Length: 137
Image (cartoon, rainbow, N blue to C red; front, top):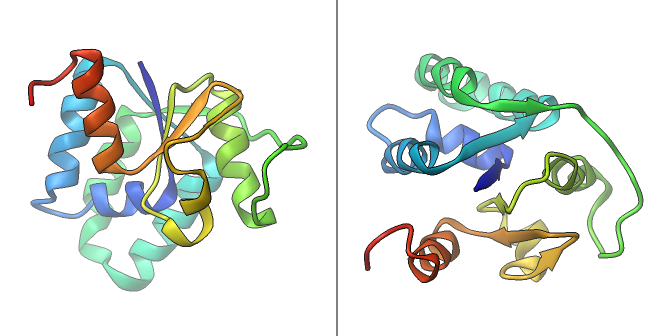
């Protein structure tokens, strides 16, 4: 199982005592956590501006990720140009899931699959993992 992490997931998963950080650790035990330099740069920039105490956790999280090369290509779904590198990264990284909390830009794609990548929130991913037998209910 491969899970691509959007910038907002990288941000929240970097914060001290974050439940999301614990969840990502559990995910890593079952598969690969994936992202790209575009998402990482956005998360780091936001941490520096809003929550510098999360930078140490960010560096630790980044060490556990597989970074895929930034690729852009035409997508068959409507998506803001700024979000193309995220979905293209998940596709190029052969991810099973794109994990994001961005309801504004990705909400119309939640629980939908684009080129083999299912776009999910944490809640949707937990449900999916339960259905696949990866976690108990």
